[in-house]
Length: 175
Image 1 (cartoon, rainbow, N blue to C red):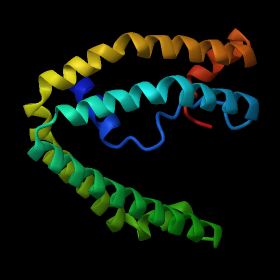
Image 2: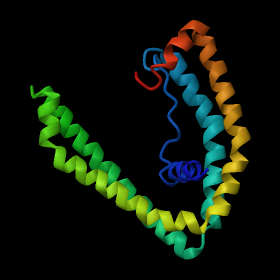
Image 3: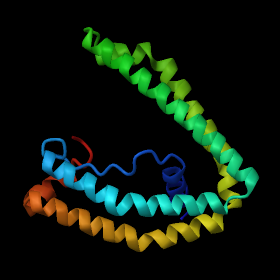
Image 4: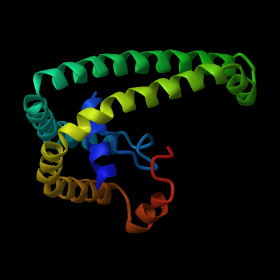
């Protein structure tokens, strides 16, 4: 339950554009991708944003201030990670092997990981102080999560046979 709460909070804390649902052929089928995006924007995102707002309104002022600071820090870290990833891609395109590029940027990647862990350690006391409120919000979303999952499976079944869906299960997210 504790891990579920942490995952739930991390999702809300760093909510950018919503949850990305990937299927093994999602990139290869633009109609499916568009329908999933549309479903997510119309049905999932408003509910998550409402829960996010409810969570923000339930924090004490000091906790909310800390959360805002951590969100800003997270955004900066994401931009830094995105920039580093672009540099790494450019080096690979320039002819370096992936192993060489990884070795070159290893220290920077480790620094990013440690910064992420440090930020989560800062977040932990806030989560502990607001555990009941967060569990309540998570429990409110459980039935809707199941409905979303069912609806998304129905959308997928329009584009794929049951055999193709079964074959994709092992490759979920690897597109």
